[in-house]
Image (tube, rainbow, N blue to C red; front, top):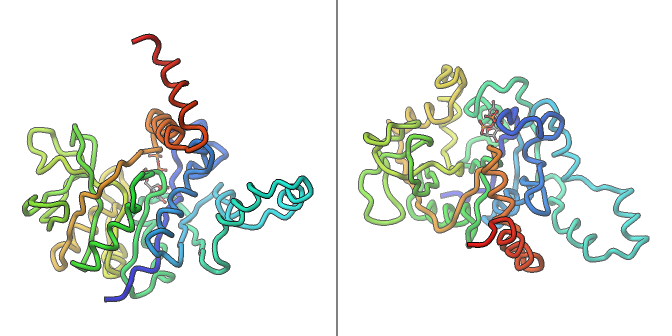
Length: 289
Ligand code: UTP
């Protein structure tokens, strides 16, 4: 089995739930504590051995491309001021030359359509997808845990996490739930709580076989009038194995206003330098108990 070398990061969505913040700034560039959300996702993928990043971009997303480029003026100013620590960090964050590709999704027709836009660059190999508005705190990184599981079972793999109310999420239907890695027999979008097949929701990390691209090519619009990745995955499940991994870690959904606030708090609290002061701030806002 070939290793997972490529990851697709769809960033062409409009981010309407966090407007007006995203009117002129891509959602993925909003800072979560001290860095843009996209940096955490690229770090997660790098830690899993990903060598090539395919960004599916749209209008108003050029700030992402610039973020991963050299910033000559800024860097020489920092050099002049002997700011070596931050310079070293900027250097560490830079991608290996040639390891990032940017393809354009001309209209936000849905996540499935965005993934399909990456088909020529991914080619005929299994690949990862990371939805950049979902941040995951995990050690090893969520995608690294998935790659380790994929090396054992192959096929297609989806990261899942338990939730309290399945009616707000994409939920998997496991064959049995005897351990963290389970075979799937289906998935449903936002099932009523009483009839949900499990409480495990899909957290925005996938490893898929390239056959998904043929299915996406003729996938019609689904929920919300968008071409949905889930619909194509359900069709792929008819001919290929799908497993779900209940990984060890915690996801944060930055796609909503309160989710974004929660992510900021979570990342501030684990920061080695500022964590204790951030905890003090949380206590201050919570008031006397
Ligand atoms: P979301 O639905 O969470 O993102 O899609 P969105 O569309 O930006 O957000 P809202 O609902 O308007 O607030 C999940 C991921 O898929 C990407 C988004 O950028 C996000 O990372 N996406 C979605 C695309 O790249 N293209 C699309 O057509 C739709």
